[in-house]
Length: 196
Image 1: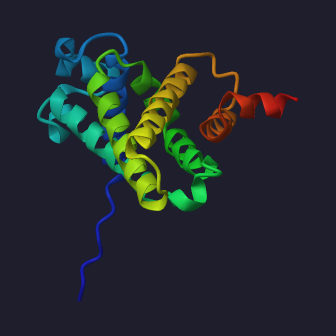
Image 2: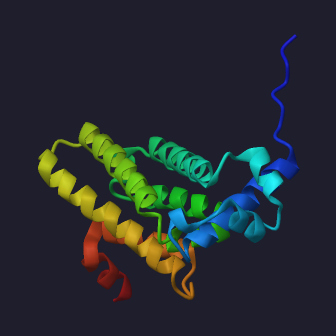
């Protein structure tokens, strides 16, 4: 008889989420090397012993955050159909919006982190690599030109989301994603056409 896969304990998930959010919040204020386990525990409203039940140190929390985020974005990219979505990439942006909406507080801290250059670079590199590969498999075009477009689109997308998280967020995230999909296909002319 097969054993059922055990669901993670809700309290464990809640505690780990509090630790991750606390670390992301602290990274919005200071560099990673300056953050102590005590600060993370205090910010997460837990004691240090509880922290050490789950993590050996602050770097292990960062590693787990990075791995989970990379895995989430990787899954979203794998679900993209380059042939279908090139003319309407909103499907891809819907997936990004869904990822961000799953935990807006966490991503809000993440996009404000002073020490997140490594994570931003990893996410951006993953997106660029996967999108470029998928694009070139479905379309015959100059690889260097495709790389320029993908580089521009991905870095631009990351900058727009970062800007949104650091703003008053008066525009809904779904609308931001929709506008990004228009810009990806039609450039500035697409937005001007929408306004006319």
